[in-house]
Length: 602
Image (cartoon, rainbow, N blue to C red):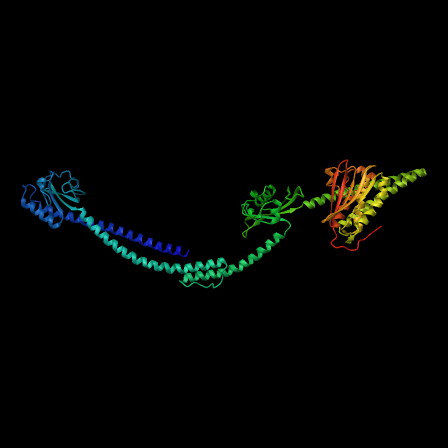
């Protein structure tokens, strides 16, 4: 950079000096040539006056050798070719050639011009001598009549020789002056370029963040002022940059920590910022999105449309859209869009920013809440309506037979028990979801617990005409959890298996263990669950066969309780089922992290 500036400055001075020298030489040559031509014209015209007086007595006289000799002597003395021509074009005398051998000069250009205007000139090669000449001719008058012409000529090659000599002198003088000027230009260029180069180096060091040894550069006053201004600017920039960097880091930290996606675009809809949440929601790479237009990086038209609308209207806008989910857990994502215009310091349009909020879970919870309220209302309404109808019937018929009244009271008790069970299950589920269900984790004797459950449900299976097969095997590892929670899980699964397996069927209770987990399996040969219902059987109040469930007294909350209790114990529940062939529920529980005294019951 330093050499470039020096050579540009120096070569610029060189070019200016050489151009000025050449221009001055050309002007001087042109001026000298014009002056010489003007002096030559005046000299030749003066010779014509003398020559006319000399030839005054010889226009009508025969050729006189003495007159010719005098003309030659005058021409040799003056260095000018002199010619005397009669009016008919006959040459009387010539200072360089024999008149008798010369042709008629009546058609010479300078003679014709003198015949018309009294005086004329021409530049041409002489037909007689063969050299370029400047001719001047003058008409000689006597008693008002033209008697002939006098002509003076000077060879132009002599003028060119003098001009060439003058040009050489001018060139050497110009070269000497140019050399002296170039030396001064070199000194001036170095004197200017060195401080400027030092100042540029100072600015580059500041730009790189190297602030050591920053001091004014020695040089002319203007350069010193420039370096001092740069140093002052550096101090202010360093302070402002520190403030801007701190503010920027705060903003980036806030944007990165937001659970919402944020996209900011400029007035040309080019992305200037996009956080990781927005990039994940729109399935784009942040490093490749910055600097590109929003509609080039995503096909979600709602995002680009709301940004464009906000920029044009200058008002905040809200919208919602659905996009395909990037994870396999969800088919689509519901996004709430909130966009606002961006303004620069002068209040002009600087772009727009949009906030993307994933409201999928919120919308799902709202849907679950609506379904829950509707289902609870329906489930509570059914037994209450039955109880109210039975009571009103008994009140309206005081003479009702005792057997009929007893039957009505038994129905009221059944509906009351159903209502009590429903309320109890709801309270249990509410406590589990609110994390109010205290789970006392300890190592459990799983074999004893499952044998107790199998013993209690063996009688129920026998009443339904079912066979309950318990296969516990050798349990080498214990599980860590709450005994009552685990008992409730197994009871619900066995109860469902017995309810939805027709008479003559079979129910299995099995336990398997490996190095990673313990699996409790409840399998039946019941009615089975269709694939479209398998994802929803763990929802509250969801029943595969609503009529059969109500007939059997089910509340629709058992599997939901199972799912939440298993998650509370750190496990998971899975389902395999085929319609008409039965279902298999598996509870996957982690092994106890430390073995304690197993708790046994029964």
